[in-house]
Length: 598
Image (cartoon, rainbow, N blue to C red):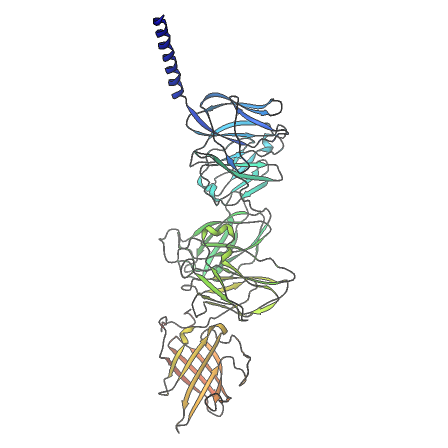
C-alpha cells in the first residue's frame, strides 16, 4: 500500500511540475480595442470568447492582456442576443502592442475587424468613415505637406507607416472626385506612435488620435480642423532679412498636391500687397527671397508652411530670417513668417489692432504702444513658434475698441525714452476696423508701423538731438534742445547777446502756438531730421515773465553732431548758424545722418 501511495505522489508531483512549467512559458500580448463600429444596439468585441475592454468616457484606452498566437478568432457581437455581426481570424505576436480596429455600420459599409501592430515611432491613418457607395466611391484620399502623391484608403483600410511630413497637417479628400472633406491643422502634440482615425459621415468627418502605450492607451478626440471655404490674404514685406536689400520676393502656394494657384510678387520693405483670394483654406507654402543687385542669389530662399481658415482675412508677414544655406546669425528667427487674422468690423464700434511682426531687440522682449490721448500704455511682445495655435494673443493689442477717435500711435521698448516707430495721426470711425503691424529689426530696417488703411508712418523723434548745441559763429552761445518723443515735439532755449552787450532770452517750440496759448497749434511737428519752430522772447525772469512773439526758426540736423539753424527774428536780419552737439549720446554715430539712424 505504501508503495502504491508513493508512486501516486510521485506522478502527481510530476504532473503539477509540468503544469507549472507550461504556465511559466505561456506567452501573452497587448490588445487595445479601437472600436468605431456603429450598431443600432449595444455590441461587444470578443477575442477567443473573452470580451475586450474598449475606450472609457474619459478617453482612456484600456490594455487587454491576452494569449498570443495564430488563428485567433475575433467577433463583433450583439450584446442582446449574442448574434455575431462580423468576425475575423487574427495572428497576434507575443509581447507586442496591437490595435484591434473595428469599423462599419452593416448598412452604409460592412463591419470589419482587423489588427495592426503599433511601434513608438510610427504614424498610420485608419479609414473608419461611413461614406456611401461602392468601394471606388467611398474610398478616401489622404495627403500631407511633402507627400509625393495622395494615398488612397478604402473603408476599413489602415495606411502604411507615414513619413514625418504628416506632422505638418493632413488633407482628406474623396478619392473619386478629389472633393476636400476635411483639412487637419498642423499637429501641436507629437503624433509619433499614434493611429489617426478618420470617422464620421460625408457631411461631417473628424480625426481622432489613438495612442498605444505600455500602460493604458489614450483617445484624443477631434483634432483641430481648418474651417473650409475661400481665404483672403495680403502679403507684407517685413524686411529684416540677412541681405540688406529693400525688395523681396514673397510667394504663396499650396503645401499639398493639386492646391490653389500660386500668388505673390516682389515687394519693397513695408509694402502691403493687394488682397489675394484663395479658393480653398488649408496649409500653404510661403517662400521669401531677397533681391540682390536686381537678381536672386542661389541658396538665399527661405520657406515655411502656414495655415489659414476659410471665410477669414489674413495678413502674412515675411520677417527676419537667415537663408537656409547660411549659418545662424543675429537675424536668424524661429518664425520667419507670421500670419495674423484681420480684425472684424462692428457697426457700433471703432477698432484698431496693433500686431507685433517685428524682430525683437532680444527674442521675447516686450514693447509698449501708447496713444497721445492720455490713455495708459499697453504692452505686447514678440511671438514664439509654439504659440501659433493660440493666434499670438500676447502679440496683439486692441488699441481702440469703442468710440471713434483720432490716434497718434508710438511704439517704444519697455523702459526706453525713445520712440522706435511712429504712425501719423489716424482717424477711426464707427463700423471701421483697421489693423496695424510693427515691422523691422531696428538695424538694417528701421521699425515701422504699416496699416491696412494705408496711413503713412512718421519719422520718429530722435533723442540724439537732446543736449547743448554750441553756435560755431558765436562763442559762448548755444541752444539747449529737449525733444519730447511722446508729443513729437522739440523745445529749446537760447541765451543771446549783441555787440552792445545786451542780452536776450529766447525759447522756442515746435508747437508754434500763440504766446501763452495752452493748445499745441502744430502737434506732431518734430519727426526726423528737420523741424520748424516758433521763437518767443522772455521779457522778465521768474514767475512774472512774459512771452512775446519773436519770429521763426528752422533747424536741419545733418547728423547727431552737426546741424544748421535758419533764424528769422522780428526786426533783425535773417541769418544761418551752424551748430555742434557738445553732449552727444553714447549711441551717436557722427557719420550717419539722422534720417538713417533710428
